[in-house]
Length: 150
Image (cartoon, rainbow, N blue to C red; front, side):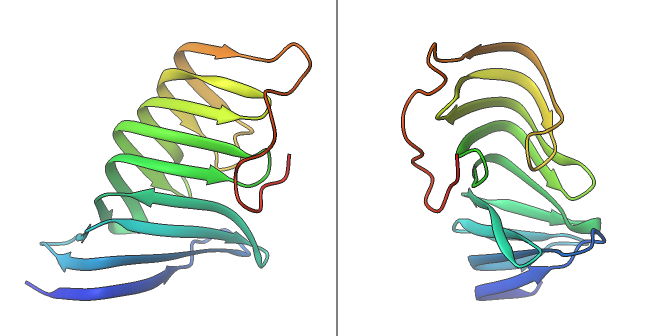
């Protein structure tokens, strides 16, 4: 088994202009996949601009750069979205974001849903049992995502 400490790495998916930057305290190879332990932080960059931030306590990196975790938090800068994902989180350029349960906070939207699937910009969203609320005046409050744009 190979074990690396203080890991920083980049993934370059097939999508033009997109790259991911990750760091983790420890990474171990386990028969065809890698486990990132001690907490993962990551960033998605599109055409040189920060687009998304990701945090997860433990992640498994599988073939095709597919990331799996039991829970994760994502901040999407455009729209000031903060997503809390649980129950089998899957992230991948082709798959987008998937989770058994999501809670979303943004200046214009709050709520939760089950069987959540979306692209990384929340443009194509699918979910079961959605319970979302939208403020009467169009905003709950200011953007709390660092560098976010509402």
